[in-house]
Length: 71
Image (cartoon, rainbow, N blue to C red; front, side, top):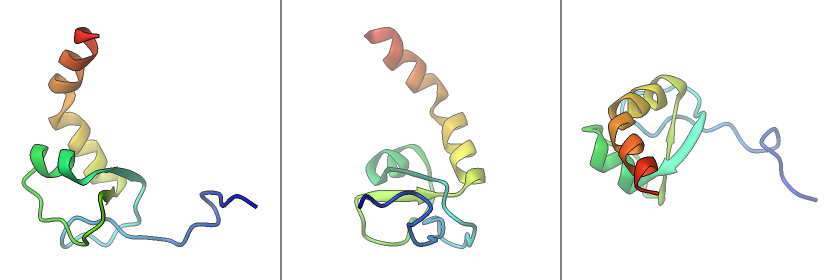
């Protein structure tokens, strides 16, 4: 049987000093390139809470817009 989001164990945000539950999973390289955050863990994916994901989206808005126009 497939695991669903509800079955997954509760994980915290990978930004150092943040203890909020993770909402999104993004590429660690993209997050590290865009933001000056110290990320914990060694996974290929970085887990972000709702507040940090919102900050990441604001910081990368222009890049995402240019990328969509390139297609």
